[in-house]
Amino acid sequence: MEDNQVVAPAASDKGLSVSGLWEVFTGPAAFFERLRKNPKIIVPWIALTVVAVIVIALVWQYSARLQIEMMERYVDRGLIPPSQVPTLESLKMQSIIGGLIFCILPSLIAAGLAKLVGGFIMGGKATFKQVLSVMIYGEFLFWIGQLIKVPLIIAKDSINVTLSLAVLAGGSGPTDTLWVALDKIGVFYIWEWVVLGIGLAAIYGFSRTKGYATALLSMGLLSLLHVVIVFIQNMFMG
Image (cartoon, rainbow, N blue to C red; front, side, top):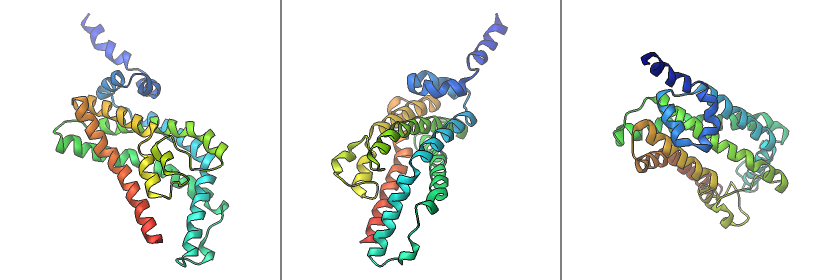
């Protein structure tokens, strides 16, 4: 009987890294309890990257077009010469590589912040691997949300598609500070925050309230940084 009790938990976690890709949607609380004992990094990160590659491959031209429009605004204000405005084709690889970096880095940075907030400020104990694992699964969920938006972007022929309060910002888009700020209050941002809160509460042994606070202070700071960068860009452009 003792041998069976030892083997059973290991057997029940076989394939956890793969099953977690849908359990993070269907049953995050139970999934993160299991993940706490057996954190996964490689498989969810590969899955996250694959989804991100698909999204970026389908919408890169819309993001690149927006970048060209911004550069043309710089030209209109005499900040750069017309020769520095890139072509759509020249931005292809830059957009794809930049997009992939953007999908990988947030998990690492947010994990570092969550480790700092959860451990140093909140007094919890968890390994960096546990925290990073939670963040990767949360980002996977977020990128599935971006994949859902792809048909809407293609149909509208514009990157200015949102499932958030950014609809209140009228015809503006990702280059507008208010639009970017309101876009953070969206379906998939909130869903990711809730799931991350559940996950961080599980691995740190926190209450859900402290888990949500830790998630907000880590991933939320990245969202705030994005808003600040857009604000500075707009200030620079006058």
